[in-house]
Image (cartoon, rainbow over all chains, first blue to last red; front, side, top):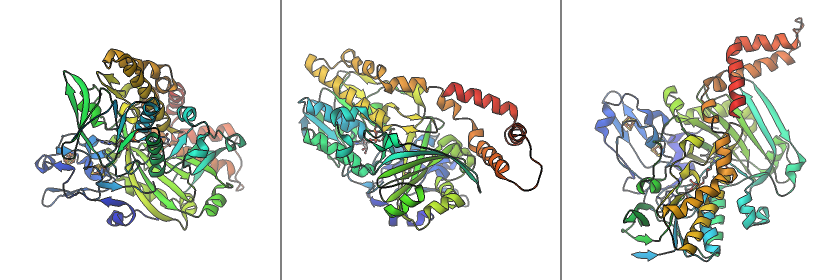
Amino acid sequence: MNINLDEIFDYTSFNVDREPHIKLNEEICKTCDQRACTNCCPARCYTWDEESQKMTFVHDGCLECGTCYVVCGNNAFTRWRYPRGGFGVSYRMT
Amino acid sequence: MKRTFDAIVVGAGPAGSSAALTMARAGLSVALVERGSFPGEKNMFGGVLHRMTALEDVFPDFWNQAPLERHIVKKGLTFITEESSFNVNFDTEHNDTPPYNGYTVSRPKFDRWLAEEAVKAGATLLTHSTVDDVIKKEGRVVGVSLLRDGAELLAPIVIAADGVLSFTAAKAGLKRPQFDPSEVAVGIKALVEMPHDVINDRFGLVCEQGASNEIVGCTSGVRGGSFIYTNYDSLSLGMVLHLSSLNSSGKTPYDLLNEFMKQPQIAKLLRGGRLLEYSAHLVPEGGYNMIPQLFDDGIMVAGDAAGFCIVTGINLEGINQATQSGVFAGKAAIQAHEQRDFSKASLAVYKKMLENSFVLKDLKLYRKTPKMLHNDRIYSQYSDLVCSMMEDVYRIDGAPKETMTKLVLRNVKEKVGLKNMLADVYGGWRAL
Ligand SMILES: Cc1cc2nc3c(=O)[nH]c(=O)nc-3n(C[C@H](O)[C@H](O)[C@H](O)COP(=O)(O)OP(=O)(O)OC[C@H]3O[C@@H](n4cnc5c(N)ncnc54)[C@H](O)[C@@H]3O)c2cc1C
Ligand code: SF4
Ligand code: SF4
Protein backbone atom coordinates (compact mmCIF):
# COMPACT_ATOMS: atom_id res chain seq x y z
CA MET A 1 0.00 0.00 0.00
CA ASN A 2 1.24 3.45 -0.84
CA ILE A 3 -0.07 6.99 -0.62
CA ASN A 4 0.49 8.62 -3.96
CA LEU A 5 -0.55 12.25 -3.88
CA ASP A 6 -0.85 12.35 -7.66
CA GLU A 7 -3.94 10.22 -7.12
CA ILE A 8 -5.36 12.02 -4.08
CA PHE A 9 -8.58 12.89 -5.90
CA ASP A 10 -9.23 9.17 -6.35
CA TYR A 11 -9.54 8.51 -2.64
CA THR A 12 -10.33 11.76 -0.88
CA SER A 13 -13.33 13.82 -2.06
CA PHE A 14 -13.26 17.55 -2.69
CA ASN A 15 -15.73 20.16 -3.77
CA VAL A 16 -13.18 22.62 -5.08
CA ASP A 17 -14.05 26.31 -4.84
CA ARG A 18 -12.75 28.40 -7.72
CA GLU A 19 -12.05 31.16 -5.23
CA PRO A 20 -8.92 30.06 -3.28
CA HIS A 21 -9.19 30.12 0.52
CA ILE A 22 -5.43 30.60 0.88
CA LYS A 23 -3.50 33.28 -0.98
CA LEU A 24 0.22 33.69 -0.89
CA ASN A 25 2.55 36.58 -1.47
CA GLU A 26 5.08 34.62 -3.50
CA GLU A 27 7.63 37.42 -3.26
CA ILE A 28 8.05 36.63 0.43
CA CYS A 29 8.66 32.96 -0.40
CA LYS A 30 11.54 33.92 -2.69
CA THR A 31 13.63 35.08 0.23
CA CYS A 32 12.37 32.50 2.72
CA ASP A 33 15.20 30.45 4.20
CA GLN A 34 13.06 27.55 5.46
CA ARG A 35 10.23 26.76 3.05
CA ALA A 36 8.73 24.63 5.76
CA CYS A 37 5.45 24.54 3.84
CA THR A 38 7.01 22.49 1.03
CA ASN A 39 7.84 19.47 3.16
CA CYS A 40 5.30 19.83 5.98
CA CYS A 41 2.12 20.17 3.90
CA PRO A 42 0.58 16.69 3.93
CA ALA A 43 -1.09 17.30 0.57
CA ARG A 44 1.96 18.70 -1.25
CA CYS A 45 0.20 21.93 -2.16
CA TYR A 46 3.43 23.95 -2.16
CA THR A 47 6.24 23.37 -4.66
CA TRP A 48 9.38 25.41 -4.95
CA ASP A 49 11.23 25.40 -8.24
CA GLU A 50 14.88 26.05 -7.58
CA GLU A 51 15.71 26.81 -11.20
CA SER A 52 13.12 29.50 -11.79
CA GLN A 53 13.14 30.50 -8.08
CA LYS A 54 9.38 30.28 -8.07
CA MET A 55 6.85 29.10 -5.50
CA THR A 56 3.70 27.46 -6.79
CA PHE A 57 0.70 26.96 -4.52
CA VAL A 58 -2.35 24.98 -5.63
CA HIS A 59 -5.32 24.92 -3.26
CA ASP A 60 -7.34 22.18 -5.02
CA GLY A 61 -6.20 19.22 -2.92
CA CYS A 62 -5.84 21.15 0.35
CA LEU A 63 -6.92 19.07 3.35
CA GLU A 64 -7.54 22.25 5.41
CA CYS A 65 -5.29 20.99 8.16
CA GLY A 66 -3.66 24.33 9.04
CA THR A 67 -0.07 23.10 8.96
CA CYS A 68 1.14 25.81 6.56
CA TYR A 69 -0.53 28.47 8.68
CA VAL A 70 1.47 27.33 11.71
CA VAL A 71 4.85 26.55 10.12
CA CYS A 72 5.25 29.63 7.93
CA GLY A 73 7.44 31.92 9.98
CA ASN A 74 7.15 34.83 7.56
CA ASN A 75 3.43 35.40 7.49
CA ALA A 76 3.42 35.06 3.71
CA PHE A 77 -0.37 34.74 3.52
CA THR A 78 -2.47 37.58 2.20
CA ARG A 79 -5.43 35.32 2.99
CA TRP A 80 -5.74 32.22 5.14
CA ARG A 81 -9.25 31.19 5.94
CA TYR A 82 -11.40 28.13 5.59
CA PRO A 83 -13.25 27.69 2.30
CA ARG A 84 -16.74 29.06 1.89
CA GLY A 85 -19.39 26.85 3.46
CA GLY A 86 -19.81 23.52 1.66
CA PHE A 87 -16.59 23.83 -0.36
CA GLY A 88 -13.23 22.15 0.10
CA VAL A 89 -12.30 18.72 1.40
CA SER A 90 -15.13 16.31 2.17
CA TYR A 91 -14.32 13.33 4.38
CA ARG A 92 -16.84 10.53 4.08
CA MET A 93 -15.48 7.69 6.18
CA THR A 94 -12.55 8.95 8.27
CA MET B 1 -30.10 38.32 6.36
CA LYS B 2 -30.15 38.82 10.12
CA ARG B 3 -31.34 36.27 12.67
CA THR B 4 -31.36 36.43 16.44
CA PHE B 5 -30.84 33.55 18.90
CA ASP B 6 -30.22 33.08 22.62
CA ALA B 7 -26.81 31.58 21.83
CA ILE B 8 -24.58 30.85 18.85
CA VAL B 9 -22.17 27.94 18.72
CA VAL B 10 -19.44 28.07 16.08
CA GLY B 11 -18.44 24.58 14.94
CA ALA B 12 -20.46 21.35 15.09
CA GLY B 13 -17.63 19.14 16.34
CA PRO B 14 -17.92 17.27 19.66
CA ALA B 15 -17.45 20.46 21.70
CA GLY B 16 -19.95 22.55 19.74
CA SER B 17 -22.68 19.91 19.50
CA SER B 18 -22.39 19.12 23.22
CA ALA B 19 -22.78 22.81 24.04
CA ALA B 20 -25.74 23.19 21.67
CA LEU B 21 -27.42 20.05 23.02
CA THR B 22 -27.04 21.23 26.62
CA MET B 23 -28.52 24.66 25.89
CA ALA B 24 -31.31 23.41 23.62
CA ARG B 25 -32.45 20.91 26.28
CA ALA B 26 -32.77 23.83 28.70
CA GLY B 27 -35.04 25.61 26.24
CA LEU B 28 -32.64 28.19 24.78
CA SER B 29 -32.81 28.98 21.08
CA VAL B 30 -29.45 27.95 19.69
CA ALA B 31 -27.74 28.32 16.31
CA LEU B 32 -25.17 25.59 15.68
CA VAL B 33 -23.05 26.89 12.80
CA GLU B 34 -20.91 24.51 10.75
CA ARG B 35 -18.82 25.20 7.67
CA GLY B 36 -19.06 21.65 6.31
CA SER B 37 -22.00 20.49 4.20
CA PHE B 38 -22.73 18.21 7.17
CA PRO B 39 -21.19 18.01 10.67
CA GLY B 40 -18.08 15.83 10.64
CA GLU B 41 -17.30 16.39 6.97
CA LYS B 42 -14.15 18.33 7.91
CA ASN B 43 -13.13 16.32 10.92
CA MET B 44 -10.64 13.50 11.36
CA PHE B 45 -8.89 11.99 14.33
CA GLY B 46 -7.07 8.73 15.22
CA GLY B 47 -9.22 7.71 16.80
CA VAL B 48 -10.40 6.29 19.97
CA LEU B 49 -13.31 7.90 21.67
CA HIS B 50 -12.41 7.48 25.31
CA ARG B 51 -15.17 7.11 27.81
CA MET B 52 -17.14 10.34 27.94
CA THR B 53 -18.95 10.70 31.19
CA ALA B 54 -20.33 14.05 30.05
CA LEU B 55 -22.29 12.30 27.30
CA GLU B 56 -23.24 9.34 29.47
CA ASP B 57 -25.10 11.82 31.69
CA VAL B 58 -27.15 12.85 28.66
CA PHE B 59 -27.40 9.40 27.04
CA PRO B 60 -27.31 6.80 29.85
CA ASP B 61 -26.89 3.99 27.32
CA PHE B 62 -24.63 5.99 25.03
CA TRP B 63 -23.14 2.82 23.51
CA ASN B 64 -26.54 1.70 22.23
CA GLN B 65 -27.32 5.02 20.59
CA ALA B 66 -24.15 6.46 19.10
CA PRO B 67 -22.77 5.12 15.80
CA LEU B 68 -19.67 3.31 17.08
CA GLU B 69 -17.31 1.02 15.20
CA ARG B 70 -15.80 -1.29 17.85
CA HIS B 71 -15.21 -1.14 21.60
CA ILE B 72 -11.56 -1.37 22.61
CA VAL B 73 -10.59 -4.41 24.66
CA LYS B 74 -6.95 -4.59 23.68
CA LYS B 75 -4.43 -1.78 24.01
CA GLY B 76 -0.94 -2.17 22.67
CA LEU B 77 2.31 -0.27 22.72
CA THR B 78 4.88 -1.21 20.13
CA PHE B 79 8.52 -0.26 19.78
CA ILE B 80 9.52 -0.59 16.20
CA THR B 81 12.64 -0.38 14.06
CA GLU B 82 13.05 -0.93 10.35
CA GLU B 83 13.11 -4.70 10.77
CA SER B 84 11.90 -5.54 14.27
CA SER B 85 9.13 -4.74 16.68
CA PHE B 86 8.47 -5.37 20.36
CA ASN B 87 4.90 -5.26 21.46
CA VAL B 88 3.30 -4.92 24.90
CA ASN B 89 -0.41 -5.71 25.00
CA PHE B 90 -2.98 -5.12 27.65
CA ASP B 91 -6.07 -7.22 27.12
CA THR B 92 -8.87 -7.39 29.65
CA GLU B 93 -12.38 -8.75 29.84
CA HIS B 94 -13.29 -5.72 31.98
CA ASN B 95 -13.34 -3.71 28.80
CA ASP B 96 -15.75 -6.11 27.13
CA THR B 97 -18.86 -5.06 29.04
CA PRO B 98 -20.66 -1.71 29.04
CA PRO B 99 -19.93 1.02 29.95
CA TYR B 100 -17.03 0.37 27.62
CA ASN B 101 -13.73 2.09 28.16
CA GLY B 102 -13.37 3.35 24.60
CA TYR B 103 -14.57 3.00 21.03
CA THR B 104 -13.33 3.57 17.54
CA VAL B 105 -15.60 5.88 15.56
CA SER B 106 -15.86 7.45 12.15
CA ARG B 107 -16.06 11.22 12.60
CA PRO B 108 -18.33 11.96 9.64
CA LYS B 109 -20.84 9.55 11.23
CA PHE B 110 -20.28 10.31 14.91
CA ASP B 111 -20.20 14.11 14.65
CA ARG B 112 -23.28 14.05 12.46
CA TRP B 113 -25.16 11.92 14.99
CA LEU B 114 -24.28 14.21 17.91
CA ALA B 115 -25.30 17.32 15.97
CA GLU B 116 -28.59 15.65 15.03
CA GLU B 117 -29.24 14.96 18.71
CA ALA B 118 -28.79 18.68 19.34
CA VAL B 119 -31.28 19.37 16.55
CA LYS B 120 -33.76 16.89 18.08
CA ALA B 121 -33.45 18.87 21.31
CA GLY B 122 -34.39 22.03 19.41
CA ALA B 123 -31.13 23.56 18.16
CA THR B 124 -31.01 25.11 14.68
CA LEU B 125 -28.20 23.57 12.66
CA LEU B 126 -26.81 25.82 9.91
CA THR B 127 -24.48 23.87 7.64
CA HIS B 128 -22.56 25.26 4.62
CA SER B 129 -21.88 28.26 6.88
CA THR B 130 -18.32 29.43 7.48
CA VAL B 131 -18.13 32.05 10.21
CA ASP B 132 -16.06 34.95 8.93
CA ASP B 133 -15.95 37.38 11.81
CA VAL B 134 -17.44 38.23 15.19
CA ILE B 135 -19.73 41.18 15.63
CA LYS B 136 -18.95 43.39 18.59
CA LYS B 137 -20.94 46.15 20.21
CA GLU B 138 -19.43 48.34 22.91
CA GLY B 139 -16.62 45.85 23.34
CA ARG B 140 -18.89 42.85 23.80
CA VAL B 141 -19.34 39.96 21.42
CA VAL B 142 -22.94 40.04 20.19
CA GLY B 143 -22.88 37.78 17.14
CA VAL B 144 -21.04 36.48 14.10
CA SER B 145 -21.04 37.18 10.38
CA LEU B 146 -20.93 34.43 7.78
CA LEU B 147 -18.70 34.12 4.74
CA ARG B 148 -21.81 34.06 2.58
CA ASP B 149 -23.65 37.12 1.39
CA GLY B 150 -22.71 38.87 4.64
CA ALA B 151 -25.42 37.12 6.67
CA GLU B 152 -25.39 38.00 10.37
CA LEU B 153 -26.38 35.94 13.38
CA LEU B 154 -26.94 37.77 16.65
CA ALA B 155 -26.96 36.45 20.23
CA PRO B 156 -25.79 37.65 23.65
CA ILE B 157 -23.52 34.58 23.86
CA VAL B 158 -21.14 33.05 21.33
CA ILE B 159 -19.34 29.78 22.03
CA ALA B 160 -16.21 29.32 19.92
CA ALA B 161 -15.95 25.56 19.36
CA ASP B 162 -14.29 25.91 15.97
CA GLY B 163 -11.29 23.68 16.57
CA VAL B 164 -7.58 24.09 16.93
CA LEU B 165 -7.01 27.28 14.90
CA SER B 166 -10.12 29.01 16.33
CA PHE B 167 -10.29 32.08 14.16
CA THR B 168 -13.45 32.98 16.09
CA ALA B 169 -11.60 33.37 19.40
CA ALA B 170 -8.77 35.21 17.64
CA LYS B 171 -11.16 37.65 15.95
CA ALA B 172 -12.92 38.26 19.25
CA GLY B 173 -9.54 39.43 20.52
CA LEU B 174 -9.12 36.75 23.18
CA LYS B 175 -5.52 36.51 24.32
CA ARG B 176 -3.76 33.35 23.30
CA PRO B 177 -0.13 32.30 22.90
CA GLN B 178 1.18 32.48 19.35
CA PHE B 179 1.03 29.16 17.52
CA ASP B 180 4.44 27.66 17.93
CA PRO B 181 5.40 24.81 15.57
CA SER B 182 7.00 23.04 18.50
CA GLU B 183 3.65 22.94 20.35
CA VAL B 184 1.55 21.74 17.42
CA ALA B 185 1.59 18.42 15.59
CA VAL B 186 0.05 17.32 12.34
CA GLY B 187 -1.80 14.02 12.21
CA ILE B 188 -2.19 12.16 8.94
CA LYS B 189 -4.20 9.04 8.41
CA ALA B 190 -4.87 6.36 5.86
CA LEU B 191 -8.18 4.58 6.17
CA VAL B 192 -7.71 1.04 4.91
CA GLU B 193 -10.58 -1.21 3.90
CA MET B 194 -10.43 -4.75 5.28
CA PRO B 195 -13.13 -7.40 5.86
CA HIS B 196 -14.43 -7.62 9.43
CA ASP B 197 -13.37 -11.28 9.87
CA VAL B 198 -9.89 -10.67 8.54
CA ILE B 199 -9.42 -7.90 11.11
CA ASN B 200 -10.67 -10.20 13.87
CA ASP B 201 -8.21 -12.93 12.84
CA ARG B 202 -5.21 -10.66 12.48
CA PHE B 203 -5.75 -8.77 15.72
CA GLY B 204 -7.08 -11.64 17.84
CA LEU B 205 -10.59 -10.23 18.30
CA VAL B 206 -14.14 -11.58 18.23
CA CYS B 207 -17.40 -9.91 17.20
CA GLU B 208 -17.19 -6.19 17.79
CA GLN B 209 -14.12 -6.14 19.99
CA GLY B 210 -11.47 -3.67 18.92
CA ALA B 211 -7.77 -3.09 19.33
CA SER B 212 -5.72 0.07 19.53
CA ASN B 213 -2.00 0.19 19.09
CA GLU B 214 0.40 3.11 19.57
CA ILE B 215 3.76 2.73 17.93
CA VAL B 216 7.05 4.40 18.84
CA GLY B 217 9.92 4.52 16.36
CA CYS B 218 9.69 4.31 12.59
CA THR B 219 9.38 8.08 12.17
CA SER B 220 12.97 8.42 10.95
CA GLY B 221 13.81 10.27 14.14
CA VAL B 222 11.04 12.86 13.70
CA ARG B 223 9.28 13.50 17.02
CA GLY B 224 5.98 11.73 16.89
CA GLY B 225 4.42 8.31 16.75
CA SER B 226 2.15 6.10 14.76
CA PHE B 227 -1.11 4.36 15.47
CA ILE B 228 -3.27 1.52 14.20
CA TYR B 229 -6.89 1.25 15.27
CA THR B 230 -9.48 -1.29 14.20
CA ASN B 231 -12.80 -0.04 12.89
CA TYR B 232 -15.71 -2.34 11.99
CA ASP B 233 -14.38 -3.22 8.56
CA SER B 234 -11.42 -0.90 8.12
CA LEU B 235 -8.18 0.05 9.81
CA SER B 236 -7.11 3.56 10.76
CA LEU B 237 -3.42 3.85 10.30
CA GLY B 238 -1.58 7.08 10.81
CA MET B 239 1.06 9.25 12.35
CA VAL B 240 1.23 12.30 14.55
CA LEU B 241 4.31 14.43 13.82
CA HIS B 242 5.57 17.51 15.66
CA LEU B 243 5.78 20.36 13.19
CA SER B 244 9.12 21.84 14.26
CA SER B 245 10.79 18.45 14.16
CA LEU B 246 9.14 17.53 10.85
CA ASN B 247 10.29 20.81 9.38
CA SER B 248 13.92 20.42 10.39
CA SER B 249 13.96 16.80 9.16
CA GLY B 250 13.10 17.92 5.63
CA LYS B 251 10.91 14.82 5.32
CA THR B 252 7.30 14.83 4.20
CA PRO B 253 4.49 13.29 6.25
CA TYR B 254 3.32 11.02 3.42
CA ASP B 255 6.81 9.64 2.76
CA LEU B 256 7.10 8.81 6.46
CA LEU B 257 3.71 7.11 6.42
CA ASN B 258 4.63 5.16 3.29
CA GLU B 259 7.86 3.97 4.91
CA PHE B 260 5.89 2.95 7.98
CA MET B 261 3.42 0.94 5.92
CA LYS B 262 6.33 -0.91 4.31
CA GLN B 263 7.85 -1.98 7.64
CA PRO B 264 7.56 -5.79 7.43
CA GLN B 265 5.46 -6.34 10.58
CA ILE B 266 3.10 -3.50 9.64
CA ALA B 267 2.90 -4.62 6.00
CA LYS B 268 1.72 -8.04 7.19
CA LEU B 269 -1.18 -6.45 9.06
CA LEU B 270 -2.16 -4.40 6.01
CA ARG B 271 -1.85 -7.12 3.39
CA GLY B 272 -4.77 -7.14 0.97
CA GLY B 273 -6.16 -3.87 2.34
CA ARG B 274 -7.32 -1.06 0.08
CA LEU B 275 -6.79 2.65 0.70
CA LEU B 276 -10.18 4.32 1.20
CA GLU B 277 -9.38 7.85 2.32
CA TYR B 278 -6.41 10.04 3.22
CA SER B 279 -6.82 12.87 5.72
CA ALA B 280 -4.90 15.36 7.86
CA HIS B 281 -5.56 17.55 10.90
CA LEU B 282 -3.61 19.48 13.53
CA VAL B 283 -3.30 18.49 17.18
CA PRO B 284 -2.69 21.18 19.82
CA GLU B 285 0.02 19.53 21.93
CA GLY B 286 1.13 22.42 24.10
CA GLY B 287 -1.01 21.35 27.04
CA TYR B 288 -1.66 23.47 30.11
CA ASN B 289 0.85 26.20 29.27
CA MET B 290 -0.78 26.92 25.92
CA ILE B 291 -4.34 27.42 27.15
CA PRO B 292 -5.72 30.72 25.81
CA GLN B 293 -8.07 33.18 27.48
CA LEU B 294 -11.21 31.10 27.94
CA PHE B 295 -13.98 33.71 28.19
CA ASP B 296 -14.74 37.38 27.82
CA ASP B 297 -17.83 39.55 27.54
CA GLY B 298 -20.30 37.48 25.51
CA ILE B 299 -17.92 34.70 24.49
CA MET B 300 -16.51 31.35 25.72
CA VAL B 301 -14.02 28.99 24.08
CA ALA B 302 -14.35 25.18 24.24
CA GLY B 303 -12.62 22.04 22.99
CA ASP B 304 -9.57 22.14 20.72
CA ALA B 305 -10.16 25.87 20.28
CA ALA B 306 -9.10 26.15 23.93
CA GLY B 307 -6.19 23.73 23.48
CA PHE B 308 -7.87 21.04 25.62
CA CYS B 309 -5.88 18.06 24.33
CA ILE B 310 -3.72 15.64 26.31
CA VAL B 311 -0.95 13.82 24.52
CA THR B 312 1.09 11.40 26.60
CA GLY B 313 2.42 9.18 23.85
CA ILE B 314 0.27 6.32 25.15
CA ASN B 315 -3.10 8.02 24.79
CA LEU B 316 -4.29 10.99 22.80
CA GLU B 317 -7.30 12.54 24.47
CA GLY B 318 -9.31 15.41 23.08
CA ILE B 319 -12.89 14.41 22.42
CA ASN B 320 -13.68 13.76 26.07
CA GLN B 321 -12.28 17.19 27.00
CA ALA B 322 -14.16 18.73 24.08
CA THR B 323 -17.55 17.26 25.04
CA GLN B 324 -17.09 18.06 28.73
CA SER B 325 -16.00 21.65 28.08
CA GLY B 326 -18.88 22.05 25.61
CA VAL B 327 -21.36 20.90 28.25
CA PHE B 328 -19.86 23.34 30.81
CA ALA B 329 -19.94 26.25 28.36
CA GLY B 330 -23.58 25.40 27.67
CA LYS B 331 -24.36 25.35 31.40
CA ALA B 332 -22.59 28.67 31.93
CA ALA B 333 -24.67 30.16 29.10
CA ILE B 334 -27.88 28.85 30.70
CA GLN B 335 -26.92 30.49 34.02
CA ALA B 336 -26.06 33.73 32.24
CA HIS B 337 -29.52 33.76 30.66
CA GLU B 338 -31.18 33.11 34.01
CA GLN B 339 -29.31 36.07 35.48
CA ARG B 340 -29.57 38.17 32.31
CA ASP B 341 -25.88 38.87 32.68
CA PHE B 342 -23.52 37.96 29.81
CA SER B 343 -20.50 39.80 31.10
CA LYS B 344 -17.05 38.38 31.64
CA ALA B 345 -17.72 38.29 35.38
CA SER B 346 -20.82 36.18 34.87
CA LEU B 347 -19.10 33.74 32.47
CA ALA B 348 -16.18 33.20 34.86
CA VAL B 349 -18.26 30.32 36.23
CA TYR B 350 -17.26 28.40 33.07
CA LYS B 351 -13.63 28.36 34.11
CA LYS B 352 -14.60 27.36 37.66
CA MET B 353 -16.42 24.32 36.31
CA LEU B 354 -13.42 23.38 34.18
CA GLU B 355 -11.07 23.77 37.15
CA ASN B 356 -13.21 21.48 39.29
CA SER B 357 -13.33 18.76 36.64
CA PHE B 358 -10.88 16.42 34.95
CA VAL B 359 -10.49 18.87 32.05
CA LEU B 360 -8.17 21.35 33.73
CA LYS B 361 -7.06 18.99 36.51
CA ASP B 362 -5.64 16.49 34.02
CA LEU B 363 -4.07 19.16 31.84
CA LYS B 364 -2.39 20.58 34.93
CA LEU B 365 -1.23 17.17 36.06
CA TYR B 366 0.35 16.49 32.68
CA ARG B 367 1.74 19.99 32.22
CA LYS B 368 5.32 18.75 32.08
CA THR B 369 4.62 16.04 29.52
CA PRO B 370 4.87 18.19 26.35
CA LYS B 371 8.42 19.12 27.29
CA MET B 372 9.37 15.55 28.13
CA LEU B 373 8.08 14.47 24.72
CA HIS B 374 10.54 16.89 23.13
CA ASN B 375 13.29 14.43 23.94
CA ASP B 376 14.50 13.19 20.55
CA ARG B 377 15.95 9.99 22.02
CA ILE B 378 12.46 8.60 22.50
CA TYR B 379 11.86 8.66 18.75
CA SER B 380 15.22 7.48 17.54
CA GLN B 381 17.09 5.41 20.12
CA TYR B 382 14.67 3.76 22.49
CA SER B 383 12.97 1.54 19.95
CA ASP B 384 16.41 0.42 18.79
CA LEU B 385 17.34 -0.29 22.37
CA VAL B 386 14.22 -2.30 23.18
CA CYS B 387 14.35 -4.33 19.96
CA SER B 388 18.07 -5.12 20.13
CA MET B 389 17.72 -6.11 23.78
CA MET B 390 14.86 -8.47 22.98
CA GLU B 391 16.81 -9.93 20.10
CA ASP B 392 19.66 -10.71 22.50
CA VAL B 393 17.27 -12.16 25.05
CA TYR B 394 15.62 -14.50 22.57
CA ARG B 395 18.68 -15.46 20.58
CA ILE B 396 20.08 -18.92 21.38
CA ASP B 397 22.98 -19.48 19.06
CA GLY B 398 25.66 -21.36 20.96
CA ALA B 399 27.38 -18.22 22.22
CA PRO B 400 27.88 -18.17 26.03
CA LYS B 401 25.14 -16.26 27.81
CA GLU B 402 25.47 -12.96 29.69
CA THR B 403 23.63 -12.25 32.91
CA MET B 404 20.46 -10.25 32.31
CA THR B 405 21.96 -7.21 34.06
CA LYS B 406 25.00 -7.28 31.82
CA LEU B 407 22.89 -7.67 28.73
CA VAL B 408 20.70 -4.72 29.63
CA LEU B 409 23.60 -2.50 30.61
CA ARG B 410 25.56 -3.31 27.48
CA ASN B 411 22.59 -2.49 25.26
CA VAL B 412 21.81 0.71 27.14
CA LYS B 413 25.41 1.85 26.84
CA GLU B 414 25.56 1.05 23.15
CA LYS B 415 22.24 2.51 22.14
CA VAL B 416 21.44 5.39 24.47
CA GLY B 417 24.19 5.94 27.05
CA LEU B 418 23.72 5.24 30.73
CA LYS B 419 23.60 8.88 31.80
CA ASN B 420 21.01 9.76 29.19
CA MET B 421 18.90 6.79 30.17
CA LEU B 422 18.89 7.73 33.87
CA ALA B 423 18.05 11.34 33.05
CA ASP B 424 15.20 10.25 30.76
CA VAL B 425 13.76 7.79 33.26
CA TYR B 426 13.74 10.52 35.90
CA GLY B 427 12.31 13.09 33.47
CA GLY B 428 9.66 10.66 32.26
CA TRP B 429 8.68 9.74 35.80
CA ARG B 430 8.22 13.40 36.76
CA ALA B 431 6.27 14.20 33.60
CA LEU B 432 3.81 11.32 33.82
C1 LIG C 1 -4.52 12.52 14.20
C2 LIG C 1 -5.38 12.81 15.39
C3 LIG C 1 -5.66 11.80 16.29
C4 LIG C 1 -6.46 12.03 17.39
N1 LIG C 1 -6.77 10.99 18.20
C5 LIG C 1 -7.64 11.17 19.21
C6 LIG C 1 -8.09 10.06 19.98
O1 LIG C 1 -7.70 8.92 19.73
N2 LIG C 1 -8.94 10.29 20.99
C7 LIG C 1 -9.42 11.55 21.29
O2 LIG C 1 -10.21 11.69 22.21
N3 LIG C 1 -9.01 12.62 20.57
C8 LIG C 1 -8.14 12.46 19.53
N4 LIG C 1 -7.76 13.54 18.78
C9 LIG C 1 -8.20 14.89 19.19
C10 LIG C 1 -9.65 15.16 18.83
O3 LIG C 1 -9.89 14.89 17.49
C11 LIG C 1 -9.99 16.62 19.11
O4 LIG C 1 -9.59 16.97 20.40
C12 LIG C 1 -11.50 16.89 18.97
O5 LIG C 1 -11.94 16.66 17.66
C13 LIG C 1 -11.83 18.30 19.37
O6 LIG C 1 -13.20 18.55 19.18
P1 LIG C 1 -13.72 20.02 18.92
O7 LIG C 1 -15.19 19.93 18.82
O8 LIG C 1 -13.14 20.93 19.91
O9 LIG C 1 -13.07 20.46 17.53
P2 LIG C 1 -13.24 19.85 16.07
O10 LIG C 1 -13.53 18.42 16.12
O11 LIG C 1 -12.05 20.31 15.31
O12 LIG C 1 -14.53 20.59 15.49
C14 LIG C 1 -14.51 21.92 15.08
C15 LIG C 1 -15.67 22.14 14.13
O13 LIG C 1 -15.77 23.53 13.81
C16 LIG C 1 -15.98 23.69 12.43
N5 LIG C 1 -15.46 25.01 12.08
C17 LIG C 1 -14.18 25.46 12.18
N6 LIG C 1 -14.10 26.75 11.80
C18 LIG C 1 -15.35 27.14 11.48
C19 LIG C 1 -15.89 28.37 11.01
N7 LIG C 1 -15.14 29.45 10.82
N8 LIG C 1 -17.22 28.43 10.76
C20 LIG C 1 -18.01 27.33 10.95
N9 LIG C 1 -17.55 26.14 11.39
C21 LIG C 1 -16.23 26.05 11.65
C22 LIG C 1 -15.23 22.53 11.82
O14 LIG C 1 -15.67 22.23 10.51
C23 LIG C 1 -15.50 21.41 12.82
O15 LIG C 1 -16.69 20.73 12.52
C24 LIG C 1 -6.97 13.34 17.65
C25 LIG C 1 -6.68 14.36 16.76
C26 LIG C 1 -5.91 14.12 15.63
C27 LIG C 1 -5.67 15.23 14.66
S1 SF4 D 1 7.31 28.94 4.78
FE1 SF4 D 1 6.02 30.72 4.31
S2 SF4 D 1 7.37 32.24 3.38
FE2 SF4 D 1 8.47 30.28 3.42
S3 SF4 D 1 8.06 29.44 1.40
FE3 SF4 D 1 6.50 28.60 2.77
S4 SF4 D 1 4.75 30.00 2.62
FE4 SF4 D 1 6.55 31.04 1.71
S1 SF4 E 1 -3.92 23.67 5.10
FE1 SF4 E 1 -2.72 21.76 5.17
S2 SF4 E 1 -3.22 20.71 3.28
FE2 SF4 E 1 -3.86 22.83 3.02
S3 SF4 E 1 -2.15 23.86 2.05
FE3 SF4 E 1 -1.91 24.16 4.26
S4 SF4 E 1 -0.62 22.47 4.92
FE4 SF4 E 1 -1.38 21.93 2.90
